[in-house]
Length: 417
Image 1: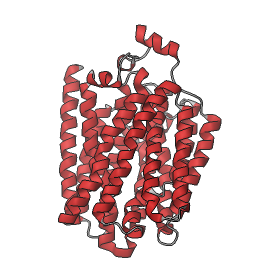
Image 2 (image 1 turned 45 degrees about the vertical axis):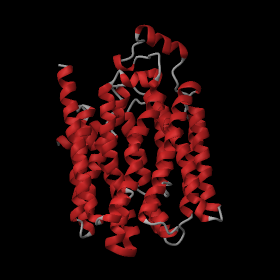
Image 3 (image 1 turned 135 degrees about the vertical axis):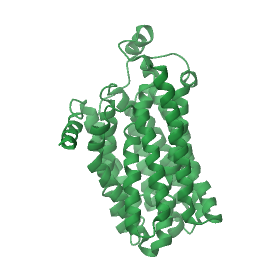
Image 4 (image 1 turned 60 degrees about the vertical axis):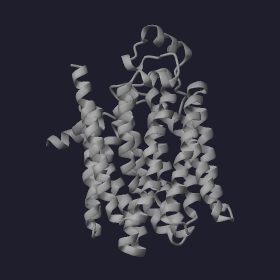
C-alpha cells in the first residue's frame, strides 16, 4: 500500500510543469529511440573497422574530448544569445554528421565525423540543461529533470535492441537512423518550445535584490571560474561525480567486450538485451524511486548511487552466465536512476541564474573527463590484465566516490545546522 501510494505520488509530481518541458520530454523519447551509434561504438570500432581494444579506447577518448570545446562554446553562447536557436543549430549539425557516416565511402573516416557529432552534442548539453533549469523551480526541479531522464530511457528501451538486431547485417543503418530521429525531435523543438533565457531586466533585479530567487541561484557578475571558486563544495561534488562517471563508462566500453569474450558472436545481441533491460528498469522504476526518495537530499541520494555502482559493477566479476549479468545490471541501474535524478538538481540548486549555461558547460567537462579517460585507461588495463579484473577496480573507485560524498554530506549538514 505504501509503495502504491508512493508510485501515485511520483506521477503527481509531473503535474504543473511548463508546456515546453513536456515537449522536450517527447523530443527526448524520439531522439533516444535512435540512440543506435554510441552504445555499439566500441564493437563497431573493433569489429567493423578492425581497431584493437587500445586503439578503440583512444578513439573513444578523442570522441569524448571533442565534447569539451563544444560544451564551452555552447554554454557561453547560450547565456549570451539564448537557448533555443543554439539548440536547433547544434543538433542539426550533429544529425548531419551522423548522416555523413552512413553515406561516406571511405569507412575509415567515420570516427572523425563521430568526433564532429560529439562536438555539436557538446554545444547541445549545457543549452538543454540551462533550459530545464530556467523552466523549473527548486520545488519541482527534481520532477523536471527526472521526466527528461525518463523520456530518454523510454526511447532507449527500444533503440539498442533495434541496433543489436541490425548490427551484424546493416551496421551503417545505425548512423542514418540516429540522424533521422534527431531531426524529427528537432522539429518539435522548433515548433513548440519557447525561448527560456532570463531577460536582462530579470537578471538585473536578481543581482540587485535577489528578485525572488533562492540564495545560491541569485544572478552574479563575473566569470564562471569566480562563481565556482566561491562554491568549493560544488566543485568537490563534481569531482566525485567524475569518479562515478569513470565507473559508469564501463557500461559502454568494458561490458560489451566482456560479453563478447564470454558469449562470442551472441555478445552483441546480449549486450543490446542488457541495455534494453537497463532501460526497462528505468522506465518501470524511476517514478517509484522518486516517490520513495523525493524528500531525500540530492547529495545523499548521489552517495547511495555510488554505493550501488560499487555493488553492481563490482558484481560483474562473478558474471559467468547471462542471468548474473542481468542481476548486476538491476543494481547499478537503480544507482543510475538515483544519480540521474539528483546530480543535476544539486548542481542547479547551487548555480546562479546568470551563469546557468556557463556552469553547465564547465560541469560536463569535469564530469565527462571520467568518461573520456576511462576507455583509454581501461583499454590499456585490459591489454595487460584479464577483462574480469576491470570489475573489482570499478568497485574500489565507486566506493571512494561514495565515501567522499558521505564526507561532503556531513560537512553540509553541520554547516546548515
